[in-house]
Image 1 (cartoon, rainbow, N blue to C red):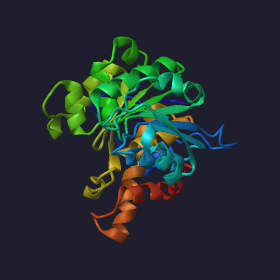
Image 2 (cartoon, rainbow, N blue to C red; image 1 turned 180 degrees about the vertical axis):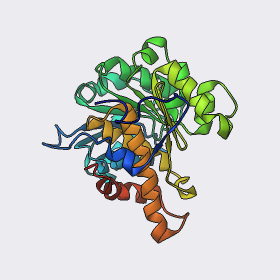
Image 3 (cartoon, one colour; image 1 turned 90 degrees about the vertical axis):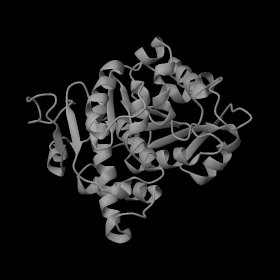
Image 4 (cartoon, rainbow, N blue to C red; image 1 turned 30 degrees about the vertical axis):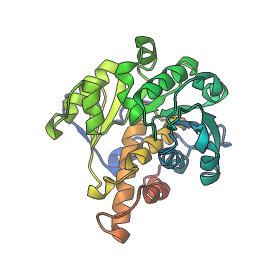
Length: 304
């Protein structure tokens, strides 16, 4: 599948392509078909003892976007609780320290079977320690088949500068990053990134890591810049970023390219917020409610 829809080629790299329903209509997603295994197997890894909710939101969003089978891996002390809270998933417990933070020790061997068969991997939701997150990412990438796409969110993003070059280099051209502006700043080695500098910063990160980068209303790759044209302030709510990451994961597992998955995922997420404005107002709706609205928006865009 082409990286950009018909009519989007040409022009300068710095001239953004505005994301609208018409643009997405010209860029159809892979058609879902077959069993839960052939439709897309997704794996979410994260979830410290204090913050397993990010994995729940991301996993549920992946399923809502059409992934057929979901596996999650979280701190061992909360794995059983996550399995009960999200009965659609299979849950694996990971080694944790005395504070409940995932250490990453043995994660690669523990998840080797899941990594071998997954169609897309998300690392980061609910992690709360840099050292353990870096070790976790290193172990997972060492076991992951070379062609499997990877989404990094939250701590999964910010530890990229800490991992060895074999790990970061092994992710080039299959990597999606979903940082907020603060996480983007840390990737750049800066204290903060001003709104007007987000695109340039994301482009720098895209070049450095061979990644598609989504930050705020922007999706940036080395080839093109996209701007989301819908959504409002209510999207800035706790867990909203986990929904974006999970939505992107679900589309990747269905066979979308990294650029397509992130552009579609961010638009559908924002449009779900617009739907919720009608009943809740501009603020006050929850990230879990965003996840529940994803299939309705996707269906309206002929994505299902």
